[in-house]
Image 1 (cartoon, rainbow, N blue to C red):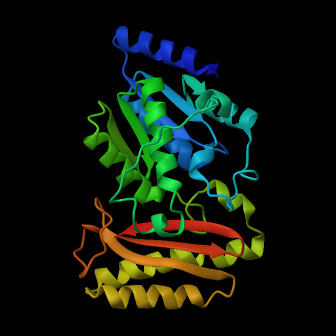
Image 2: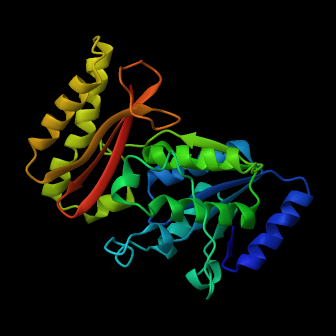
Length: 280
């Protein structure tokens, strides 16, 4: 397995792979890799000849009061996990190489990114689309694999790829969960044992809603009210949003249509912001 830090070297190597007819799979990450990330590597290996895992904590998707400086960075351990999972290249550029002095160009998606997390994190998705566009241009992937836990991000990236005619297939991997039901997330490392116990109510509330729909509930208001009530029973949880939305457009739903919608939740567990979702 190779480790590449230079943007120019990575781009040149990717062009060579494409010229030789190799299919490239990209798994974009911010590191602190967990089973969710590693499952995406597995998907990429099934679909591509060469798998590139990018590890880059992207500053442009963090707000001024967010956790960029303390975001967990475990590069050596991440590289070993990628090697053990069978990745071919780890691309770990520096901030200075990705955003050189005087950098001033950004990519905006203006509809799907507007709601949900876009309300409380107004510049987040501009950073996501910009860094993904840069990674696509640098690594030249045929396939890029993202995780369903970040459902709005997935929808935004799919829209950007379609709108800007980017020749890459976006593949979405299922959310991976720990034994307590919580979606695997790098930010779970921030939680104490007590905080995690209460945060696990997020996934429990999603399963409760799924059961309600399976048993015939079709009222969005009822689903949202029951999930919100369940979350507020945990004194360390502060709800940011609970919404039922279309799986592709993220437009809020008026009525439950099984198979076409997601229930999305964002909440603070003390000082840690968590998101999760489930297909209804």
